[in-house]
Image (cartoon, rainbow, N blue to C red):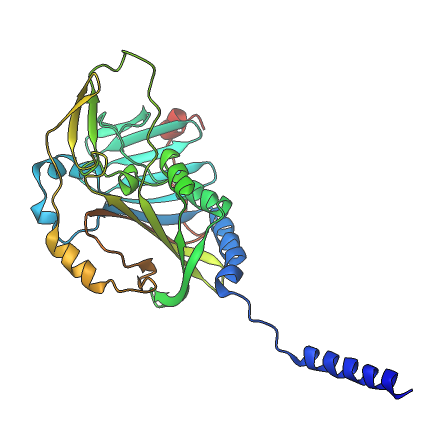
Length: 327
Protein backbone atom coordinates (compact mmCIF):
# COMPACT_ATOMS: atom_id res chain seq x y z
CA UNK A 1 0.00 0.00 0.00
CA UNK A 2 2.96 2.31 0.52
CA UNK A 3 4.47 1.93 -2.98
CA UNK A 4 1.64 3.71 -4.85
CA UNK A 5 1.80 6.55 -2.33
CA UNK A 6 5.58 6.78 -2.73
CA UNK A 7 5.31 6.78 -6.51
CA UNK A 8 2.68 9.51 -6.36
CA UNK A 9 4.93 11.57 -4.10
CA UNK A 10 7.88 11.20 -6.50
CA UNK A 11 5.76 12.22 -9.49
CA UNK A 12 4.37 15.24 -7.63
CA UNK A 13 7.84 16.32 -6.56
CA UNK A 14 9.16 15.97 -10.15
CA UNK A 15 6.27 18.05 -11.46
CA UNK A 16 6.96 20.80 -8.93
CA UNK A 17 10.66 20.85 -9.79
CA UNK A 18 9.87 21.00 -13.53
CA UNK A 19 7.43 23.85 -12.96
CA UNK A 20 10.09 25.80 -11.07
CA UNK A 21 12.61 25.53 -13.93
CA UNK A 22 13.17 28.95 -15.54
CA UNK A 23 12.07 29.10 -19.20
CA UNK A 24 14.86 29.35 -21.71
CA UNK A 25 15.44 32.95 -22.82
CA UNK A 26 14.31 33.69 -26.35
CA UNK A 27 16.96 34.24 -29.01
CA UNK A 28 17.13 38.08 -29.32
CA UNK A 29 17.97 37.87 -33.02
CA UNK A 30 15.01 35.63 -33.80
CA UNK A 31 12.77 37.79 -31.63
CA UNK A 32 13.82 40.87 -33.62
CA UNK A 33 12.73 39.47 -37.00
CA UNK A 34 8.98 40.17 -36.72
CA UNK A 35 9.76 43.55 -35.17
CA UNK A 36 11.98 44.45 -38.12
CA UNK A 37 9.44 43.27 -40.68
CA UNK A 38 6.73 45.35 -39.02
CA UNK A 39 8.99 48.44 -38.93
CA UNK A 40 9.88 48.13 -42.63
CA UNK A 41 6.24 47.64 -43.62
CA UNK A 42 5.07 50.54 -41.45
CA UNK A 43 7.74 52.91 -42.77
CA UNK A 44 7.05 52.00 -46.40
CA UNK A 45 3.38 52.82 -45.85
CA UNK A 46 4.21 56.21 -44.28
CA UNK A 47 3.89 58.48 -47.30
CA UNK A 48 4.96 62.14 -47.31
CA UNK A 49 8.39 61.13 -46.02
CA UNK A 50 11.72 62.74 -46.95
CA UNK A 51 15.01 60.96 -47.61
CA UNK A 52 18.65 61.69 -48.34
CA UNK A 53 20.53 59.00 -50.26
CA UNK A 54 24.22 58.75 -51.14
CA UNK A 55 26.45 56.14 -52.74
CA UNK A 56 30.22 56.08 -53.21
CA UNK A 57 33.32 53.95 -52.85
CA UNK A 58 34.39 53.49 -49.24
CA UNK A 59 38.08 54.27 -49.60
CA UNK A 60 40.73 56.45 -48.01
CA UNK A 61 42.58 56.76 -51.31
CA UNK A 62 39.99 58.65 -53.33
CA UNK A 63 42.66 61.06 -54.54
CA UNK A 64 44.80 58.23 -55.90
CA UNK A 65 42.35 56.66 -58.33
CA UNK A 66 43.75 55.30 -61.56
CA UNK A 67 42.63 56.58 -64.97
CA UNK A 68 39.94 53.91 -65.37
CA UNK A 69 38.47 54.64 -61.94
CA UNK A 70 38.39 58.35 -62.67
CA UNK A 71 36.64 57.75 -65.98
CA UNK A 72 33.74 55.99 -64.26
CA UNK A 73 33.80 57.83 -60.90
CA UNK A 74 30.71 59.87 -61.78
CA UNK A 75 28.62 56.71 -62.17
CA UNK A 76 29.99 55.22 -58.97
CA UNK A 77 28.89 58.02 -56.68
CA UNK A 78 25.97 60.34 -56.14
CA UNK A 79 23.83 62.26 -53.67
CA UNK A 80 20.07 62.73 -53.84
CA UNK A 81 17.55 64.52 -51.63
CA UNK A 82 13.96 63.54 -52.17
CA UNK A 83 10.59 62.47 -50.84
CA UNK A 84 7.74 60.15 -51.71
CA UNK A 85 4.04 60.88 -51.68
CA UNK A 86 0.87 59.14 -52.88
CA UNK A 87 1.61 58.39 -56.54
CA UNK A 88 4.62 60.72 -56.69
CA UNK A 89 8.40 60.55 -56.09
CA UNK A 90 10.56 63.69 -56.12
CA UNK A 91 14.37 63.67 -56.39
CA UNK A 92 16.94 66.47 -56.51
CA UNK A 93 20.50 65.44 -57.42
CA UNK A 94 23.57 67.07 -55.96
CA UNK A 95 25.84 68.52 -58.63
CA UNK A 96 26.18 71.13 -61.35
CA UNK A 97 23.79 71.52 -63.02
CA UNK A 98 21.29 70.62 -60.31
CA UNK A 99 19.08 67.90 -61.77
CA UNK A 100 15.50 67.38 -60.62
CA UNK A 101 13.31 64.39 -61.41
CA UNK A 102 9.60 63.82 -60.73
CA UNK A 103 7.97 60.44 -61.31
CA UNK A 104 4.25 59.70 -61.27
CA UNK A 105 3.04 56.32 -62.46
CA UNK A 106 4.59 55.50 -65.83
CA UNK A 107 5.78 59.05 -66.48
CA UNK A 108 8.94 60.86 -65.43
CA UNK A 109 9.80 64.51 -66.02
CA UNK A 110 13.13 66.23 -65.48
CA UNK A 111 14.69 69.67 -65.37
CA UNK A 112 18.00 71.30 -64.50
CA UNK A 113 19.43 74.77 -64.09
CA UNK A 114 19.46 75.24 -67.86
CA UNK A 115 16.32 73.38 -68.96
CA UNK A 116 12.60 73.53 -68.25
CA UNK A 117 10.54 70.53 -67.19
CA UNK A 118 10.36 67.97 -69.98
CA UNK A 119 9.26 64.36 -70.41
CA UNK A 120 12.13 61.87 -69.99
CA UNK A 121 12.69 58.14 -69.52
CA UNK A 122 15.88 57.08 -67.77
CA UNK A 123 17.53 60.42 -68.58
CA UNK A 124 18.10 63.83 -67.11
CA UNK A 125 16.75 66.91 -68.84
CA UNK A 126 19.97 67.36 -70.86
CA UNK A 127 19.76 63.80 -72.21
CA UNK A 128 22.41 62.20 -70.01
CA UNK A 129 21.34 58.84 -68.61
CA UNK A 130 20.38 58.56 -64.95
CA UNK A 131 22.62 55.83 -63.57
CA UNK A 132 20.43 55.45 -60.47
CA UNK A 133 17.27 57.09 -59.14
CA UNK A 134 16.29 56.01 -55.59
CA UNK A 135 12.84 54.57 -54.94
CA UNK A 136 12.97 54.33 -51.16
CA UNK A 137 9.33 53.36 -50.73
CA UNK A 138 9.76 50.34 -53.01
CA UNK A 139 13.09 49.46 -51.37
CA UNK A 140 11.43 49.32 -47.93
CA UNK A 141 8.58 47.21 -49.32
CA UNK A 142 11.02 44.72 -50.85
CA UNK A 143 13.12 44.48 -47.70
CA UNK A 144 9.92 43.77 -45.75
CA UNK A 145 9.09 40.98 -48.23
CA UNK A 146 12.55 39.38 -47.87
CA UNK A 147 13.22 36.79 -45.18
CA UNK A 148 16.05 38.82 -43.72
CA UNK A 149 18.75 37.06 -41.70
CA UNK A 150 19.55 39.21 -38.66
CA UNK A 151 23.11 38.40 -37.57
CA UNK A 152 23.77 41.09 -34.95
CA UNK A 153 21.85 43.47 -32.71
CA UNK A 154 23.00 46.62 -30.93
CA UNK A 155 21.72 49.91 -29.58
CA UNK A 156 22.89 53.39 -30.41
CA UNK A 157 21.73 56.90 -31.15
CA UNK A 158 20.94 58.92 -34.27
CA UNK A 159 20.43 62.68 -34.02
CA UNK A 160 20.23 62.26 -30.22
CA UNK A 161 17.45 59.71 -30.67
CA UNK A 162 17.90 56.19 -29.25
CA UNK A 163 17.80 53.57 -31.98
CA UNK A 164 17.97 49.82 -32.30
CA UNK A 165 20.59 48.71 -34.83
CA UNK A 166 19.87 45.43 -36.59
CA UNK A 167 22.61 43.97 -38.81
CA UNK A 168 21.53 41.85 -41.78
CA UNK A 169 23.49 39.61 -44.14
CA UNK A 170 21.72 39.59 -47.50
CA UNK A 171 21.62 36.28 -49.35
CA UNK A 172 22.90 35.90 -52.92
CA UNK A 173 19.33 35.83 -54.28
CA UNK A 174 18.41 38.95 -52.28
CA UNK A 175 21.49 40.77 -53.61
CA UNK A 176 20.58 39.78 -57.15
CA UNK A 177 16.93 40.85 -56.78
CA UNK A 178 17.81 44.17 -55.15
CA UNK A 179 20.34 44.94 -57.90
CA UNK A 180 18.37 43.81 -60.94
CA UNK A 181 15.19 45.52 -59.74
CA UNK A 182 17.09 48.81 -59.47
CA UNK A 183 16.50 49.22 -55.72
CA UNK A 184 20.19 49.77 -54.98
CA UNK A 185 22.87 51.39 -57.16
CA UNK A 186 24.48 48.91 -59.53
CA UNK A 187 27.89 50.05 -58.33
CA UNK A 188 27.10 48.63 -54.87
CA UNK A 189 27.37 45.09 -56.22
CA UNK A 190 29.35 45.65 -59.44
CA UNK A 191 31.28 48.94 -59.40
CA UNK A 192 31.80 49.99 -63.00
CA UNK A 193 35.16 51.56 -62.24
CA UNK A 194 36.45 48.29 -60.87
CA UNK A 195 34.24 45.71 -62.49
CA UNK A 196 34.88 44.01 -65.78
CA UNK A 197 33.88 46.25 -68.72
CA UNK A 198 33.31 44.22 -71.87
CA UNK A 199 32.66 45.27 -75.41
CA UNK A 200 31.25 42.33 -77.33
CA UNK A 201 32.17 43.06 -80.93
CA UNK A 202 30.15 40.07 -82.14
CA UNK A 203 26.94 40.79 -80.21
CA UNK A 204 24.73 39.67 -83.10
CA UNK A 205 26.64 36.49 -83.86
CA UNK A 206 24.50 34.26 -81.69
CA UNK A 207 21.92 33.97 -78.93
CA UNK A 208 22.00 36.49 -76.11
CA UNK A 209 24.17 35.14 -73.29
CA UNK A 210 22.72 34.80 -69.82
CA UNK A 211 23.42 37.68 -67.46
CA UNK A 212 25.96 37.05 -64.71
CA UNK A 213 24.43 37.58 -61.24
CA UNK A 214 26.31 39.93 -58.91
CA UNK A 215 28.84 38.12 -56.76
CA UNK A 216 29.20 40.81 -54.10
CA UNK A 217 28.79 40.24 -50.39
CA UNK A 218 26.32 42.83 -49.09
CA UNK A 219 25.87 43.78 -45.44
CA UNK A 220 23.01 45.96 -44.24
CA UNK A 221 22.45 47.86 -41.00
CA UNK A 222 18.90 49.03 -40.29
CA UNK A 223 18.35 51.70 -37.64
CA UNK A 224 14.86 51.90 -36.18
CA UNK A 225 13.18 53.78 -33.36
CA UNK A 226 12.15 51.20 -30.74
CA UNK A 227 9.42 53.51 -29.41
CA UNK A 228 7.64 54.23 -32.69
CA UNK A 229 8.72 51.20 -34.74
CA UNK A 230 9.85 53.47 -37.60
CA UNK A 231 13.00 53.01 -39.71
CA UNK A 232 15.35 56.00 -39.73
CA UNK A 233 18.35 54.80 -41.71
CA UNK A 234 19.55 52.04 -44.04
CA UNK A 235 23.29 51.41 -44.39
CA UNK A 236 24.36 49.08 -47.21
CA UNK A 237 27.96 47.98 -47.77
CA UNK A 238 28.99 45.93 -50.78
CA UNK A 239 32.21 43.91 -50.88
CA UNK A 240 33.41 43.14 -54.41
CA UNK A 241 36.45 41.03 -55.25
CA UNK A 242 39.06 42.71 -57.42
CA UNK A 243 40.52 40.86 -60.40
CA UNK A 244 38.16 37.92 -59.92
CA UNK A 245 36.95 36.61 -63.25
CA UNK A 246 38.19 39.77 -64.94
CA UNK A 247 36.84 42.21 -62.36
CA UNK A 248 38.81 45.42 -62.38
CA UNK A 249 39.76 44.98 -66.02
CA UNK A 250 38.73 46.47 -69.32
CA UNK A 251 38.32 43.57 -71.71
CA UNK A 252 37.54 43.62 -75.43
CA UNK A 253 35.85 40.50 -76.74
CA UNK A 254 36.19 39.23 -80.29
CA UNK A 255 34.99 35.70 -80.93
CA UNK A 256 35.42 34.89 -77.26
CA UNK A 257 38.99 36.21 -76.97
CA UNK A 258 39.75 38.71 -74.21
CA UNK A 259 42.57 41.21 -73.88
CA UNK A 260 43.24 43.02 -70.62
CA UNK A 261 43.63 46.76 -71.02
CA UNK A 262 43.62 48.13 -67.47
CA UNK A 263 43.40 47.02 -63.85
CA UNK A 264 42.58 48.15 -60.32
CA UNK A 265 44.88 49.34 -57.55
CA UNK A 266 45.72 47.10 -54.60
CA UNK A 267 45.13 49.76 -51.93
CA UNK A 268 47.84 48.26 -49.73
CA UNK A 269 47.52 50.78 -46.91
CA UNK A 270 43.81 50.07 -46.47
CA UNK A 271 44.44 46.34 -46.52
CA UNK A 272 47.01 46.61 -43.73
CA UNK A 273 44.70 48.71 -41.58
CA UNK A 274 41.71 46.42 -42.11
CA UNK A 275 43.76 43.27 -41.55
CA UNK A 276 44.95 44.76 -38.28
CA UNK A 277 41.37 45.01 -37.07
CA UNK A 278 40.51 41.47 -38.10
CA UNK A 279 40.99 38.75 -35.49
CA UNK A 280 40.14 35.10 -35.17
CA UNK A 281 36.65 34.64 -33.84
CA UNK A 282 33.31 36.40 -34.36
CA UNK A 283 33.06 39.41 -36.63
CA UNK A 284 33.43 42.80 -34.99
CA UNK A 285 30.84 45.46 -35.84
CA UNK A 286 31.16 49.22 -36.33
CA UNK A 287 28.05 51.34 -36.90
CA UNK A 288 26.07 48.16 -37.41
CA UNK A 289 28.30 46.82 -40.20
CA UNK A 290 30.86 44.02 -39.84
CA UNK A 291 34.56 44.82 -40.06
CA UNK A 292 36.01 42.69 -42.86
CA UNK A 293 39.42 42.48 -44.47
CA UNK A 294 39.71 44.83 -47.45
CA UNK A 295 42.52 42.85 -49.05
CA UNK A 296 41.71 42.41 -52.73
CA UNK A 297 38.28 44.01 -52.25
CA UNK A 298 36.47 47.07 -53.55
CA UNK A 299 34.10 48.43 -50.90
CA UNK A 300 31.01 50.44 -51.86
CA UNK A 301 28.50 52.15 -49.56
CA UNK A 302 24.87 53.12 -50.09
CA UNK A 303 23.15 55.02 -47.27
CA UNK A 304 19.53 56.20 -47.00
CA UNK A 305 18.47 58.56 -44.18
CA UNK A 306 14.73 59.00 -43.59
CA UNK A 307 13.25 62.14 -42.00
CA UNK A 308 9.92 63.97 -41.60
CA UNK A 309 8.00 60.69 -41.55
CA UNK A 310 4.47 61.48 -42.74
CA UNK A 311 5.09 65.23 -42.48
CA UNK A 312 6.90 66.18 -45.71
CA UNK A 313 4.67 68.26 -47.95
CA UNK A 314 4.35 67.10 -51.54
CA UNK A 315 5.70 69.42 -54.26
CA UNK A 316 3.19 72.01 -55.42
CA UNK A 317 2.89 71.01 -59.07
CA UNK A 318 2.42 73.67 -61.71
CA UNK A 319 -0.10 73.33 -64.50
CA UNK A 320 2.72 72.40 -66.91
CA UNK A 321 4.06 69.70 -64.58
CA UNK A 322 0.59 68.22 -64.15
CA UNK A 323 0.11 68.16 -67.90
CA UNK A 324 3.43 66.41 -68.50
CA UNK A 325 2.73 63.88 -65.72
CA UNK A 326 -0.83 63.27 -66.90
CA UNK A 327 -2.32 64.24 -63.55
